[in-house]
Amino acid sequence: MAASGPTGGEERPQSAVSAAAPHPALAQRAAAWLASDPDPETRAALAHLLETQAWDELAERFAGRLAFGTAGLRAPLGAGPMRMNRLVVRGAAAGLMGFLRAQGCTAPLVVVGFDARHNSDVFAADSAAVIAAADGRAVVFDGPGPTPLLAFAVRHLGADAGVMVTASHNPATDNGYKVYLSDGAQLVPPIDLEVAAHIAAAGLDVPLAAADHPAIVVMGASVRRAYLEAVVGQLSPGGARQVRVAYTPLHGVGARTATEAFAAGGFPTLQVVAEQADPDPAFPTVAFPNPEEPGALDCGLALAAAVGADVLLANDPDADRLGVAVPDGSAGWRVLTGDEIGVLLADHLLRHRDRRGERLVVTTMVSSRQLGRLAEARGVHYAETLTGFKWIVRPVLEHPTWRFVLGYEEALGFAVGSAVHDKDGIAAALVFAELVAESLVDGVGVLDRLELLARELGLHATVGYALRFGAAAGAEAQAATMQRVRRVPPVVLGGVPVSARRDLLEHPPPGPAVAAVPADLVVWELADGARVVLRPSGTEPKLKVYLEVVEPVAPTAEGYRSARAAADRRLAALRSDLDDLLLPG
Image 1 (cartoon, rainbow, N blue to C red):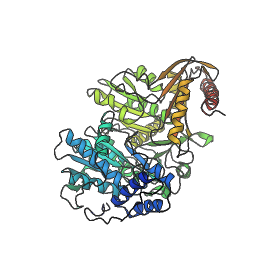
Image 2: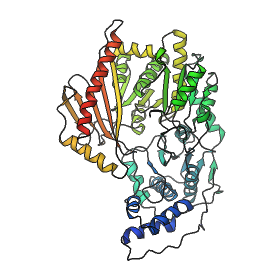
Image 3: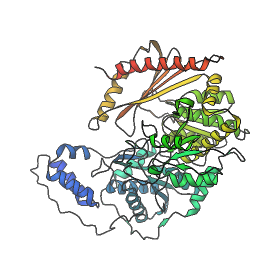
Image 4: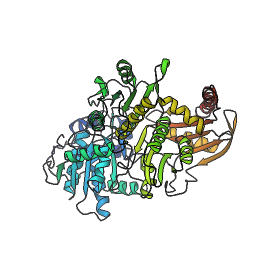
């Protein structure tokens, strides 16, 4: 891990800002930041902005401070309180320690993980130095690693908290900071606001311990071994393992752990995409390092076809998400949606795992309702939560005597079992490989299994897409669009009446699984059983739209194809009307 930099005698720039500057208050705030910034690169960039009087850019960077969103802090790298940088990270670490002390923790133990993005190792080292200086103890990754390993390590080590420096699947320009408490789960309200208040009180000059402070230790190999044992334990003993897997970590940190996990699970050696195997914070072969994005799997699909793979598995850069593609006969390869992967995993686990006791499956309000139908058919508990794994794990924590089978969100996040209280792309990849291996033995392919589930539960066809806004006015455009559709909601969509409307800002869903927390999300139910959900992204300037239609499947040779065609027509009609509604003019 790279050193965090000086711990006491950092060189400070000498900067004076004239009170006669066109924006004196803004200039003074920027100058104060400049005087405390320990990073030569961000310091030079900020000094240049001041020298060139780039007031619009400065105003954006100093408009406030980063707030905890979907998964902690996440933003582009750069100077200022609205960017990810060393001062922001130090303040976040100091705020976390302040929160833990306020909760009565003495000498808190905090696990610190980091991925391979720009400055992730530096941010992790700074966090450890802040923790040690605040009379805490820091256990730090021995190198870049996956987010699920961090979430696992928090509980395995009995830590009071954990932080993971990662921007997950965001663009290469970004970084982020996820925070976990002792339950190994991400923060939920009101705790996130309490931590944010402590961060705000931390100030710019946070005390730091030396890099060799005895309270800072490197995480031992035994934790990684325990994690691998836990995820391999999600497999069926003696289950099918003979499957040819093509795999890509998309330039992230997943390859080492995935390779070790597949070997420990008894699978053949992974066929890894060579040009994407090693961590590279520039992500040179993909426009966006997200398995959901068009083109992100192109290199993986090429390898899968070349080696005759039975499945392509893809992790995002911090290995907490899983993308899947399977052969589709003469059509080549088909990339599965998150909803398809989720119901396939749930069906497989419910069929092949111990059926004793009460079992639980969980998904979100923007995911397909097919999992609920499956749960009802199999006689297991089902919960539907707000978006994000910080919510998906709540029913698991609230019902410790129930056996957690699967939690998933349509955005390729899957938790298999309760070893990790967060999404885990490594564990999900193992189980999906087992599913494919079984299909090769029994002759019922992955796509065949989807058809069988559609015949039993109805064809649930889903489409998710995003309306992106410019970075400069993204938040304002998101808010304006949501305000407009709340003020004048549609009466008919796709030629079908809207039969029910739910606004989760005004009427939060009841029940412990979602804690009755208001959410910026609207749901429109249509008279024919279709559903439309709208919500702003918590990490990017875009509005997310989720569509679902349900078609019965006739028990004939053409029944599935006919239902699929009907669903496609209904989805197209819905999207056309929504484009007119959300993009006026």
